[in-house]
Length: 404
Ligand SMILES: *Cc1c(COP(=O)(O)O)cnc(C)c1O
Image 1 (cartoon, rainbow, N blue to C red):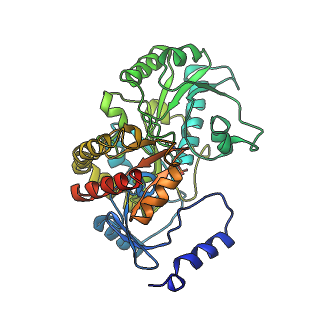
Image 2: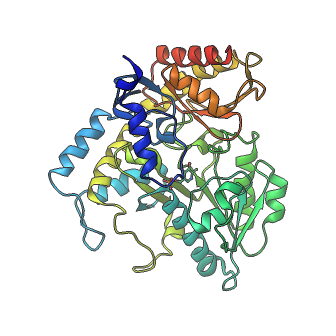
């Protein structure tokens, strides 16, 4: 095929012409997908090693999820929470059971789940803990990524995410990630919650030192502070467990979930917690027009059922071991370091060789899609339906890119 017959260049020009430039996508234009594979407008195929930042843990168009969506589209799509619909109870009960919590509050995007967690923690602080009016604070970690709302970027430490979006929401204290002593020292009598990612995805799949999460759990319990785990990216099978917290046997007071909960079909997020926490909300105090809608519930219930089998967690553990072994073999051959757990990896490429962006562009030319996070760090998060052969293929392509 000669170049000017390709549809990709024009499709990219059109996309750039008509959108705000808040993303810098790789130069591929996708038109269809199945399982772990994407096809572009020119018929080229790519192995998906990003999986929508973990929104596609079950792969593209998982048959069970697509069937649930189709069936629900033909019955009922939206009611608002002004009325109860017949998909709501099963979703809430089954997700609550998966989380080991009493209650669930459904929202749409991850950022809304985080906002919900913040609001619930503050209300809990005033009504249950007895914090003086307007004084509540929440301890968060350096390098965090919790979303893009004005409140959430107020406590981001990424200047790109934060600069020029002030005035900033007060009430947050930032401490180094993985440093239990610093976290403990930051807690005072007005602290209502500690909000953390159990593994920092956006920061480059940063795993905290062993014992940190159990330590945070202990300190939160001792000081009567809620432990909010943002498992929006790390949860729902990605790390080889249902939740990244499970790996260290830690149970937070609140789970924040999103991304994979929508099965790669619709945005679905949720907060799960016990009655003593989520029970502080009364009618009119919080809500969402689309949160918990019938289509979202129908798809997400099937997501929860897929996770309840344990199959995807098992795949992530087993295939993750293979992925990490392959990546470790490249340390010293273009990679400086590899981090992660399960089918989730952050790679630091030797910056003398190339940037993360360049590596991802070269991978794309070789039919593998991944995404840089910062500088020379890239993240791999393939769908959990990926096969051993496909993992070996991705590692081989990365080796070839690094070898120049
Ligand atoms: C993606 C993400 C969010 C925000 O989710 P959106 O659906 O993009 O609003 C929050 N926290 C973490 C850890 C995430 O990875």
